[in-house]
Amino acid sequence: MSVDNKKIEILELLEKDSRLEVDKIAKMTDLSVEETNQLISEMERDHVIAGYSTLIDWTKVLDYEGVTAMIDVKVTPTRGVGFDKVAERIYRFPEVKAVYLMSGAYDLSVLIEAKTMSEIGRFVSDKLSTIESVLSTTTHFVLKKYKHDGIIFESDDDDKRIMVTP
Amino acid sequence: MSPSSKTSYLSRTVEQLQPSGIRRFFDLASKMENVISLGVGEPDFVTPWNVIEASFHSLEQGYTAYTANAGMIELRMRISAYLKRKYQVEYDPEDQIIVTVGASQAIDLALRALIDPGDEVIVVEPSFVSYAPAVSLAGGIPVKVDTDPAQDFKLEPYQLEQAITERTKAIILCSPNNPTGTVLSKEELTALAAVVEKHDLLVLSDEIYGELTYDDSHTSFSEIPGMQERTILLSGFSKAFAMTGWRLGYATGPKEIIKAMTKIHQYTIMSAPTMAQHAAIEALDHSESSVQEMKKSYRQRRNFVVKELREMGLDCYLPGGAFYVFPSIQKTGLTSEEFAEELLQQQKVAVVPGNVFGRSGEGYIRCSYATSLKQLDEAMKRIRAFLKTL
Image (tube, rainbow over all chains, first blue to last red; front, side, top):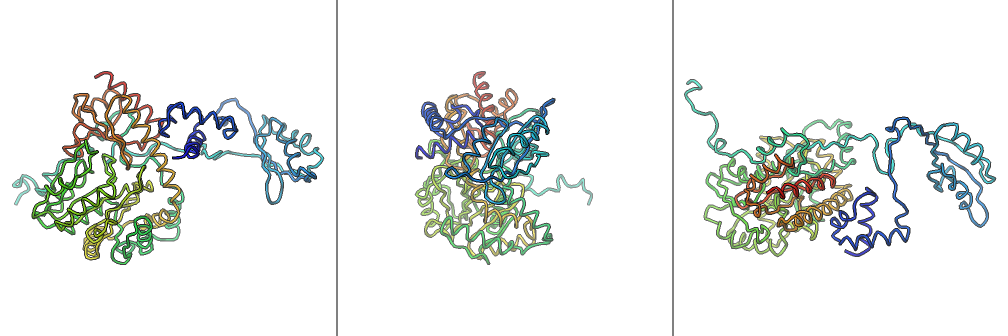
């Protein structure tokens, strides 16, 4: 198997579980621990691995208040840089978790997380709408997360097999 | 005549059948809590969602009645196309394919269609627990052939030759094998085919694990030149598509044999479940990527488990297919039953003792790696701890 295929295999494993230990990855992909470490370092250096994060179901955390909204944003593209400049002005805000350029009825899709609805309101009215090239915004609040980043939040994943089978 | 005048109403055949050793281990393990099971002979994946959804659709459309005895023609056409695509063998969906209730029923039907009392059928051990009893139930005599661990449990042509008598009618082959994971290559199958041809035998080729090979692609016995007319290919959806509970298998072979099997099937089962057949069509049409995904995961876990077992000093060859490893526990001085039972009692890890699969499985244990990596990792730690106490 080529190095690129091994890299893909490592990435797929890390994408599912970024805490997977290197020695386990090495055993599974039939590489040595040194080789695995080296490939991971290379991919970190090249920003193929852009970061390691943890997917948390915050609704299960007591006393945690949080609101998620998805905002459809229509903008006027800027000569020379298209949508990139306005996108940057938006994604630099720490409460913005994701920004995508979309085809269709609007241009940018902005995912934002905040403590309260009024914080989101303030972000939209004070920060987002006031950017010069922003023409309009439509805010949708997330009521419940069923699945995120490929992970089903409320899933019953119990092993339903009996203990010993032929 | 009063019931008490008979010692038993049971048939002698049934009375003489040994209960499966798997059952005993199931009983032991299921009474305990927090057991990690490596004793499971089925995928840990749930059936791909598109396949499950197809069965809902089938029911919603009102398909709640019997299908043709041999199975829906649409499904048989898909199976035919699939086998042609995979192995370049052609089977007529009209009269060379029968859809069964799991590959297990296909085995039973094939044996009942072929065997007269006293006919011998060669069973290569270690083997799936049902073969020999299925031969006995059909009135035949199972002739067990041990394979050599030093040859990775591969049947050698001379071993087959030695087991053949005038009464030998067929041989049951299973590659990739349950419980050893051994895969027979095209060359090895060709060598066996020469013996099969010389002695005019039939081959019941159980290829239920055919999709699950990790280093080389699977060779079907039916694609060996001259063997298609001597082969009853038995397979199903359980392992490749994670559909064990759906109970859907199939058999392909020479017309007169499939016709005879269909006759028995029609008088006993009628037809396989309809919604499962609709699901199977979806599985064959649109699940290639799911199969590849599962296969990749099995391969990674196989590599992990074999390396772990070797690190703890157990001899274990790298099996080419299915989802079992079959390490030797001879170094411990325990029998496979003792090892499995002690491991279960002390560390709560369930494995299946190798002797359950035949005499040549003694000294080995079957560990299924169709379990999450987390569970496998914990199981390996516990086995390591157990070995240290010996």
